[in-house]
Amino acid sequence: MPRTEGSPESAGVSSRAVLDFVAALEKFEFVHSFILTRNEIRIASGWWSPYTSETPHLLFSLSKSFISCAVGIAVGEKRLTTDTRLLDIFPEYRPVVTDGRFERMTIRHLLTMTTGHEVCSTAFFKAAPDGDLKRDFFTSPLVFEPGSRFVYNSGATFMLSAAIRRLTGENPSVYLKKRLLEPLGIPDRLWDKSPDGTELGGWGYRLTTDEIASFAQMLLHGGRSGGKQLIPEEYLAAATAFQVDNAMNEAPDWKQGYGFQFWRCRHNAFRGDGAFGQYALVVPEQRMTLAVTAGGKNMQTILDIVWDHLLPRLEDHPLPEDPDSCGRLREKLASLALPRLHGVPPCRDSVVSAAFAPNPAGIRRVRIERTPARCQVGFTLDDGRLETLRAGWETPEEGTTALEDGEERSFSATAETAGDGVRLRVYFTSTPFVSEYRFTVTGNTVVFSRERNLCFRTAPWPELCGEIEKNMPGPEK
Image (cartoon, rainbow, N blue to C red; front, top):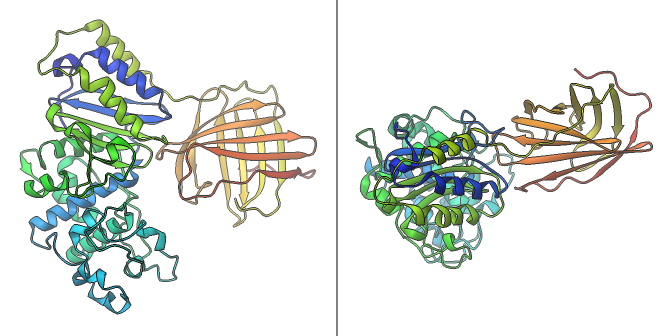
């Protein structure tokens, strides 16, 4: 990552162009952060509160590009080649293979997502007692000859992660630590694992925006950083080039070709990307990189903003300084914030508690306590756990909770009164997810509903209706 920070004009782009770019990003729900670098100068960066530069963010499938780098380094160390057959790495699974096409599946097929599956192979990953996802992969149905057709396949990336672990004795993040991550300034970060302890590879990694930006700069320089060649140049050139046709996709930047766990883009650019707008975008001809974290449904929109608001306004030479526009840009970047509720604090304390019939959300009871300082909601779950959300009326309250999916996550929450009930807006600040909780009190009932900005591998929560408890539980600490 360049240590040089400068005005946009010093890198050949006007501050007004970057202001227009930021204004366009703000119309996308929700961009969380970005870092824009051109000509080795970091010209603009921003985090929309409550997101911060210090908090690692879920990368989703941007994780895949790091697996590609691990494979490239392993190729350089002659631990494997792209033509190595997968079953030669995992020969113990030959007895469960019933489709001979698995014998012809190579590392290249995994890298290019041309394994022969008709759908993502994670659809066949089962919750077996031994949690053997490798066996699930080798027993999943193939429809095409490996190498003949692109089908997006996170299970293929998991198998690359498993191959790295088998061949090196280390999970990818450990294998990459001295070879790539530490040279880029990336410390140990969490990467979700399969039941047997293998890092998932295709998803589940977490990085800060600065760390994504450092990765993107290394890609721009052909695998070099700090004067060292971290990834073999020949491999990375192939990884970021057109390797397989994906013109069956609809979105313009999803049909420009696919490399080795990298997407080709319009304007001769390439990227690693993850669901809902996690980007390491590299535009070599413009010597530009962009790191983004976000939480939106239409990922094409962010790329369109880059092509429409930045690309046409890049110059090959520095521009005259524009202190007024540059000052307005800095002020704008310092004041970025996502929408929050602005509730009026109640004049007195109140407590409402309700119990719910058994339900798919697993919520047994809810207790809503409103004070002039905050709104506090306690959820008693079917497994006996108590999860508490605290939300501020004017200033966000922060904390951690495992309410939504059992994983402890940081949050920032605000509240407002809604009739006789209350509404909470909760940003889960290490993820793209935003939830709104509504509690409507009518007579002797409390109706609870949740709206989420994005659904990802979880079913929507049902609306719950519970009877207000006359003998309420005591205060929850």
